[in-house]
Length: 315
Image (tube, rainbow, N blue to C red; front, side):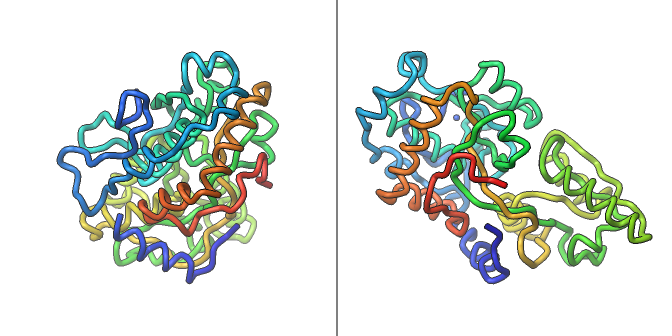
């Protein structure tokens, strides 16, 4: 599921057009409305797309009783535009993942509430039953499948983000040797950086200095000030940030195919197969009727679209 350089260029161009409860209506299915003070060119109005989703009575009937009565409690790390982040009001979650979650909930005929949580806490919170779902740009991998189940909804890969003009001469993973690199704690980016550091030392080159933080915002500040030479991030976030931060004057993305491409998955407790299967069928229905594609297109990330909502499709 890696993308070609041409596909990345298309995504770069398309991004130019770029809830503790979800935004919109009281049922959490109102779509992303324009936040006060948000630039019209950066935040799409997807309310009509999400509000057009119709409840599927059979899928609703198959849900666990607790979900039917209390709705879905979904946790994200609300730090990663355009996946999921806060609107200009500082409290309304928005993003293409937020809209997909609302559309899935609407198809299931229930409410959905978002909770902001550190990325490293998402899996354990799901396992403990504190939340029903996670949706936070989390890669579906075999290692994580041993802990939770996934319903795949997007495809992406790791991308290197650097300062505008590339003053450190970074052109790919091998040129990260000896450099300071920032990642978010507990992500596949951190694992890749550590593995790349080992690869560098084995080749007789300096190791990476890896700085792990709890948010993309911290990493961006470090990159802007030159404390790190690069950030590892997923393609949608890296492209969005590079195009919007400082009106596109702060950062750029290293050209080339994304690294270790794979699917993002909605996390579900392995014991809750009824919820997993209902979410999978709801998402597949949204793919089939075009709602899914419209949401991704509105956010400029349609290059990551999937055709099948697989369960545990990652490797």
